[in-house]
Image (cartoon, rainbow, N blue to C red; front, side, top):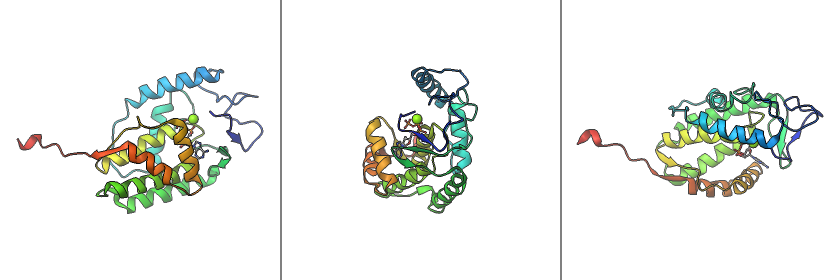
Amino acid sequence: MSSNDKYGVDQDPYCYRGTGTLKNLLDLHDEDDLNEAERYLTEAAAERLEFIEPPYSLDTLKQIHRTLFSAIYSWAGEIRTVKISKGGNQFCVPDRIEPEAAREFRKVESNGWFEGYSRDLLLKAVAESYSTLNVAHPFREGNGRAQRMLFEWIIINAGYEINWWEVDKQEWIKANHQSFHGDDGPLIQIFDRCIGLPIMEDNADDA
Ligand SMILES: Nc1ncnc2c1ncn2[C@@H]1O[C@H](COP(=O)(O)OP(=O)(O)OP(=O)(O)O)[C@@H](O)[C@H]1O
Ligand SMILES: [Mg+2]
C-alpha cells in the first residue's frame, strides 16, 4: 500500500490499529513482509485462474480477486466498505461501486465485448473501460492485479495477445492518474505496447 493512501475514517478498520498495514490472515504486521507474501501468493494463485469467456460482470472480477487473495485477506472477493483515494484521487464511494461497475459491464457487453475490433479501436476501448473500472476500485486492495487479469481475458477473447512485461510501475500509475482526470492517451500508449498481434486460429485440425 502506498503512503499516499488516505481513508475516509480516522482508523481504517481494514488496518492494524494505529498503522497503515492491512490486517491479514498471515498476521504479518510488517509492510515489507506482507508485500512479499502478497506477491508470492498472488502469483501462485494466478496459475490456478483459467481463462473464461464472456459474459463478464462485477461477479467475475470478485471471483478473480477471491482466487488471488483468499490466502491473504478474509475479505477477498468482497466490495470494500471504506472510502479510499490514491495520489489525491478519490475512488467511488462504496455505495456507488456496484451501480458504476454494472453500468460499465453493460456498456462493454453492448459493444460485443470488443470482438471484431481493429487493434486501434481495441486499444482505445480497453483503456477507457479499464479507467472506468479503476475509478470504481471495488476492493480495499488488489484492484490492479484483479483488473489486469480480467482485461487479459477481454483482450484474449477479442482475439489479441497480451503481456504486461513492458509496463513500468510508475508509468502505469501515472497513466492511471491521468486517465482518472479524463486523458486516456498515456494508458492507450501502454496498451499499444502490451497488446500484440491477433491470435491466429489453430489450423492443426485441417491438416
Ligand atoms: N493516483 C492514482 N490515480 C488513479 N489510479 C491510480 C492511482 N495510483 C494507482 N492507481 C491505480 O490503482 C491500482 C492499484 O490499486 P491497488 O493497490 O488496489 O491494487 P494492486 O493490485 O496492488 O495494484 P498494482 O499491482 O498495480 O500495484 C493501480 O494498478 C492503478 O491502476
Ligand atoms: Mg496495491
